[in-house]
Each structure stands twice: as C-alpha cells, then as structure tokens.
Image 1: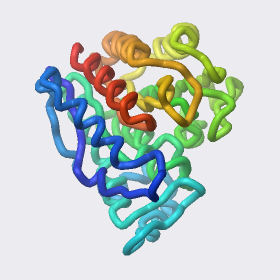
Image 2 (image 1 turned 60 degrees about the horizontal axis):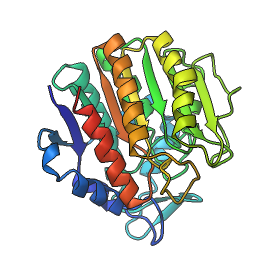
Image 3 (image 1 turned 135 degrees about the vertical axis):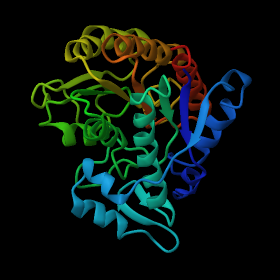
Image 4 (image 1 turned 180 degrees about the vertical axis):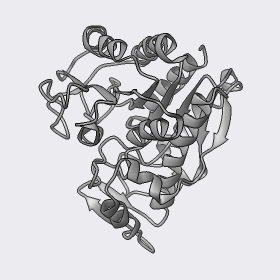
Length: 308
C-alpha cells in the first residue's frame, strides 16, 4: 500500500499580513521538495471540504459560529494577537478539516498505509472556544474524534512534536480518557502550557525540553516518556501533530533537531502503530517556519512514511 498525501490549492489562499511566519510559501516549499522523483509513489489527493458541523467534534458551536461570522470581504480580521482571517480562510480551514477526516477514512479503511496532510491553517493551538497561535480549528482532535465517531476507534493517540505546546489539543481532550495526548516542546516558550504536572485524567503526557536541547534530549524524551505511554495506551490509531519548528534552523524557537531526528521519531511511532493498530497513522502539518528546514523535514518524514 502507498502513503496518502492530502493537499489543496485553497491552502495558499489563507492569507496573512506581510511578515507573518505562517505564510503560504511554507506549502510552496513543501511542494517543491516533493516534486523529487522519489515521491512519485505518493497517492496525491485533494482535500474535500468538510461541513461546518464537523468542527464541533472539537469546538463549541458558539465558537464555530464566531469564526464563520468573521470572514472578511477583503483584508484581514484579527481573532487574537497573531491569528488572522482573510476572505478564503474559513474555506481553507474547512478543507484542512476535510483533509484529516479523509485521511482517517482512507487509512482506517485500509486503502492506504498511512497519510500526511499538508494543510494550512494549522490546528493544535485552537482551543474549544478560541483561536490561538495561527490556528482556527483543531485538526488533530477532529481527526481523532472522527475516527471514533465514524469508525468505532476506542482509543486514539495524538503525538505532538511541534516545538510549541499544543495547548488547544490539551484543553479539548483534558477529561477524555479515550484520547492520549503526548507532547514534546520547548519550555519556556509560547503558549506557556505543557508542564509535566498537567496530566488531565492520566491521558496527557508532557515532556518539556529546555532551550538548546538537541536530538539526544529529544530522543530521550521519546524513549523514556512518549513511546512507553503510547505503548501502554494501545491505540487504534495514531495521529501526529507534525510541526517542524524544533529544527535547529527555525527562527521561532531554540531546539536543535535535524531531519534525522524527525525520521527517527516517525519510525518509532510507525513501529508502535504496526504493533497496536495495523500501522494506522495520520500525520498533519502544524508549525515550521524556516522554509529550507521545513521542506527538508517534511520530505524526510514522508520518505519514512513511504517505507511502511
């Protein structure tokens, strides 16, 4: 079976003010990297448009209506200090939700081995009732709950290696023992959450990394905390919040990973997915703001996925 790659041109039309790090060029850089012939075997599909109601798998209806009601006719609307909407942002966000749900359908249904969703806007900072950190809807949680609602998955793991803690994912699943959330992230750093003692109902595993931490520290966090938690949980599906801003080149943080570290983490999670859930794994793009590092890291991540 192949690896599914979900994309859509609408993601380039989620516009942000000049100088904003979460910019359309991120996806252009990824597309260029994936034009290499070694990716010819990808099953490339365009993301469908999700119904607005699907977002209520993770968000309060009042918040969903707020987002839908703030689409500008032109220019930008600011939802928080660094989260903006442009005229096509809602459509892009719903295609992002559609992407992860479609990926879950294809992976759980056995049509593909695993999947990567190259989406904008990202999702893991979006809480149940507010936009944050470039994020409108929480794609990873929606993917997990879609797997539960449509496919009967009893337990879903979300692993988040973005350099910023996924406060939104944590907030939404805080009391949901059917979803394990495990995160490595720099601390201190935005958004300020993610301390080890933040553990929900025993379903949240936070492993902060100090500024300057390298691949050895990252791998140790996985080996000592993240991987055993996933193994003990025994998920029916693994969802990866795949941010690549822990790369040493990234301008928004101070962790010193490289492509080999992301490949290693991918392979370790693939091994656990194989052990517990027939290899079922869906990865969705979060952060990563140096274009060269992002493109190389996503390419390396997908190259590993294709070896399933």
